[in-house]
Amino acid sequence: MAGMSSKKRCKGSLDTQEQDRDATEDFRDYMADVVSKGHTCLSIALGHELRLFDVLGDFDESKSCRVIAETAGCKEGYIKAWLRTMVSGKIVEVVENEKGETLFFLPKDRLSSLTSTENNLACLTRQVPIYSTVYPDVVRCVKKDGPNGVDYERFAALDVYWEETNKMMHNSRKHLSFILNQIPGLITQLENGTTVCDVGCGPGHRANLIAGMFPNTKVTGIDISEETVAIAKTKADELMLPNVTFMSADGTSLPENWAETFGYVTMSDVIHHVKNQEKMLAEVHRILTPGGVFSLFDFDVHERLADNYGKPSASVMYAFNLLYDLPASLGDDGESGEGHGHHGEVFAHGHAPDDGHSGDDKKPETVLEGHSLEEVCEGFEKPMNILRKVGFEIEIKQIAETLECHIIATKKK
Ligand SMILES: C[S@@+](CC[C@H](N)C(=O)[O-])C[C@H]1O[C@@H](n2cnc3c(N)ncnc32)[C@H](O)[C@@H]1O
Image (cartoon, rainbow, N blue to C red):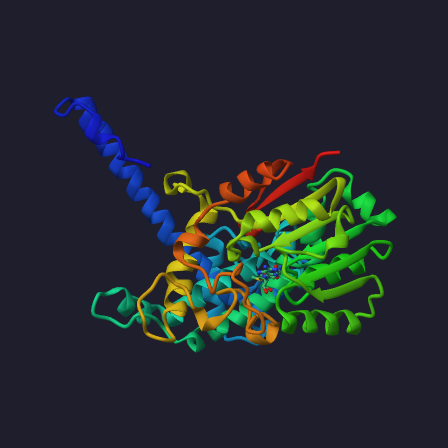
């Protein structure tokens, strides 16, 4: 970052003064960019919520603000203001016709990121306005004499957000194909028929999706929460998927007779909730066939804060922790703490209780109650090292759009 090494420089020379001035200006440019992108982000969220990108995407040619507003069922003045922010934010393109009229269009190559129901990146911007609703309360919490946390109910909009992003991003077919394609040969194996286990499957979105996409493959979803497993089963029945089964089990001690059973094991957003990570990852190793592959998805943050300097996924994760995890987990009992004890749930974020994640039915000592700033930001190095220790060969891929990292671990043959 600009200006960081100024102390080391010899003061007084003209060169040094010039360098300092450049560094200051670079930093001011950087700050202006941050502010500008923040405004663009909020405006994208508004466009996404009002389906304005879909309206633009449906046109075959550029249209005037009036036509766009009418088609969207919105007021022209507001749409004019919105289109201005979208053009200056490089999201929507603008042309002038021969009459000098300003016309707007959304280039085809942006449609899939902004309008489709799958892999829709615009939906991710919605998190920012949701934080804004509790922002004044969080500010009060930070102060020494302020309240400890914010009532969890105040974050209700996040549950709707997660449900939406789950469908549009994390567990969309397109995203699943993208991540499966990161493992050479896996799609062919799944098409031909193999065995898959999703450990900590939650309400079964991913397991059901894999089962639906690959009818020759047998999928098993396991989760410690019986309530969650019941939801997953109901969804599989609704989808009439004969090749998926769900059962309640602790990922740290899976059935004895599962040794070398699965060709592919997946685990998403689970490992940082688990106290005995080594036990769980050793179990994954045990249940995989030799040469089988394990996909571990978790936050794309490093263990050392300094390594996260300028890392986009880390700033999103840390902000999430500051603006949601900490205030929500401290909101109930009013006790000071580290972010634990969030509604007494097995985990602290990500899903509404009716999404099957309340986890009150079983609370083994292997599972943390919520997670603290430290746990969330523990970094992917820890599970990576454990994976090596229990016998895996590993490689790591970053998934920019979901801000996760995908650790691909192969059991030696
Ligand atoms: C944040 S949710 C993620 C759910 C799902 N994998 C997804 O990506 O939507 C974490 C899940 O891990 C489960 N879990 C936590 N500890 C577990 C354990 N020891 N064994 C099995 N499941 C566990 C929780 O019950 C919860 O459903």
